[in-house]
Image: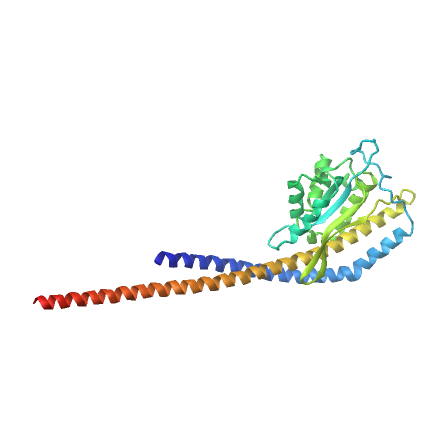
Amino acid sequence: MAEQLQAIQRRIKSIESTEKIASAMQLVAAAKLKQATNRFNYSRNHLKPLADMLKERIERENFDKDPSYYTNKKTVIDDNKEIAPSLTIVITGCKGMCGSYNSTILKELEDAEAMTTFLPLGLKGYDHIRSHNLFLLEDYIVDISPEDQDSTDSNNETSIRSRFRDYYEKPAEEHSYSHILNLSKKIIYRQQAGEIAEVHLVYAKYKNSMAYEVVSKMVLPVYNVDEKPEYTPYLAEFLALTLYGAIGEAALNEYGARRLAMKNATDNAEEILAGLETKYHRARQAQITDELIEIISGTESQQALEKEAKKKR
């Protein structure tokens, strides 16, 4: 019985520690959720109108959208017509403890076409792409873009890889707008160099404070702007605004999912603790009852022995 009580006490202490951790993580997620909400509101009210205006301005030019216009220098199909793979940008978290948030997003990659290369924004997406032997943009390098030529690294390809790695090794919401704009410029350069075709985006779209929807959509077709190269910066700016808004939206959903997951974990820990405490008290009462029975039995045995002794006298 004593060993059983000690085992229950150890279990209670373990659950109490888990509850404290989950409660602390819930508070942190709630604080970050408030910051993400402010960013989402700013993006929806200010950045999205800019992106829509840029898209409308680009669409008015009626650029050719034939994805085969820019030829790829690496991938050749049977009829020797060169084509470029599409690029899918995947926004995930870098950490777990947020329920099914990351796994639900990554499930969308199961239907990706064979001719697809990926750019993950978030470590969970990178780990999934690597473990499933999918192509990464950093693996699909044909030449050096102007943005990468100013590197002091003697090995330019290594430098490019490390720069792309910067985008998925830390949470996407920690990237500044200028950082996302630089990434967009690299993507536009590689698109116009024929290394990639249209650009797709997979992320969690905000529905309400308790729900989100995983969206997979094309955000940038292949525009033939060779006759009007002055529109190239517009494409980069539009892509950057779209990505930055999606990152803020994804962060809002991630922290909402993490807060809910930690709240559920805290509630479950409290329920388990209540059950363990009831079990402990019952075991303790049973131990006390056994001890009382032993005391009473011992007293009665002693009294019986004393009576026998008196009779013999």
